[in-house]
Amino acid sequence: MGHVTLLLHHPEALRKAQAEIDAAVSTSRLLTADDLPHLPFLHCIITETLRLYPGALLLHESSADFKVGGYDVATGTMLLVNVYAIRRDPAV
Image (cartoon, rainbow, N blue to C red; front, side):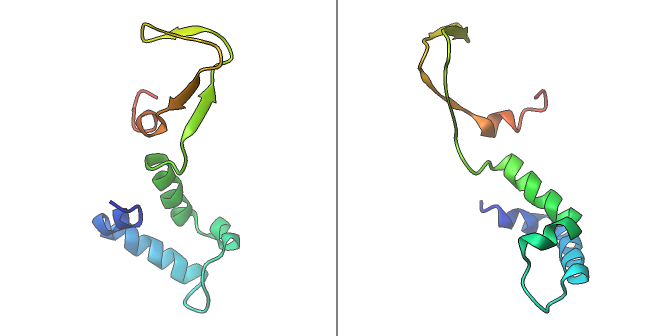
């Protein structure tokens, strides 16, 4: 599912975002990054979308030997952090 389509499943949020944009910018021009400080609801939508669907992989190189989940990880091992799962875990 595309990220923008998430709003289609929440029409009340889409209406609220559209009203906020109309009040701040109207239809006279396109939005710019300079408008974001005046659009707190839209900013929250963007932030939540990035939380749910991170834009990039997080790679990490271990700086020391350690154990995780019963496995030995050697210094210099490249690790792929599953940000998608972390950001969806209510305990985190």
